[in-house]
Image 1 (cartoon, rainbow, N blue to C red):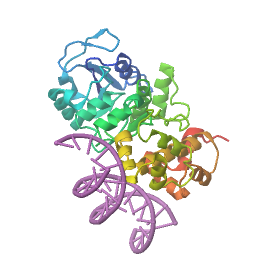
Image 2 (cartoon, chains in turn green, cyan, purple):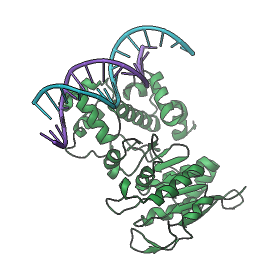
Image 3 (cartoon, rainbow, N blue to C red):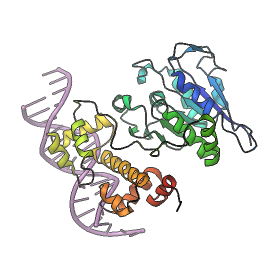
Image 4 (cartoon, protein in one colour):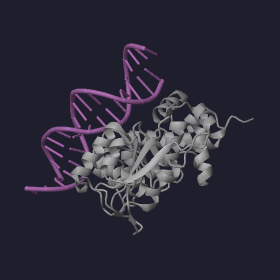
Length: 322
DNA sequence: CCCTCTCCCCGCCAAG
DNA sequence: CTCTTGGCGGGGAGAG
């Protein structure tokens, strides 16, 4: 089988830690005979050195032309605050990314999602980024369905991860997707990280993305999280927020990038996943405690979110032992 | 799988 | 004049 070509696109102020991750986690993947499965190289737009977030300079393997032969392009985060806003991403970089996306899988880590979004690669898709930048991302890119609570999002040929170390989770997921669990577990072992995070891929609902204090709907979101198990209507939320339903939905979209119901459903899915991962509570009870009207509803939403049934999901994380 | 009913989403616009 | 609010209604999604 031909080596899978990976090109890391390093940009100025690129986060050093993340820029090295593909070499470790994709470059470190091997088949059962010990042969590497990916070749990882690093490119900068003009082939010249860039200065990383750590201050040292990085000399790449080549320029943007390297991306032509890439099966997967990885865009690590950039740290030059407040770069990048869409109009600060150079047109030629946008063109390079668009071309790359038309023939390669594209993966971003952390604020790399801002670069992908600026190139329009995330329009109409689901994506994530570092939680600290989620609200800004939602404001800048309302056309992207942002899921700020997950470690990564696999949207097929475009994959995005949360901040820094979440890149590890995503790259392991890529290996798992390409070559199966055994190969991914082997890389994880070699790099001395857990094959997946304790608690699975979702972050815990009990320590959700910190809501920006004072921002319009943060208190209401917090409030809703504490009564997820009960039926909540837009009227309920608006009443708590002290505004009209119209203003509430408007603020929700501005601050979370989502409509209230979509946000609520997402939180419920998170809670359900958490319960499936950590307890043996029956699916009916999980549905109830997560605020779904029925097990059917839970099944539907879980399937839409991650493509598996509740019991299959639980089996993945709790094992089929005993 | 389909049907019906309810609730939601969001562009639009007038008012504050 | 600009910004925010909130009521309305068509189109649509989800529940049962």
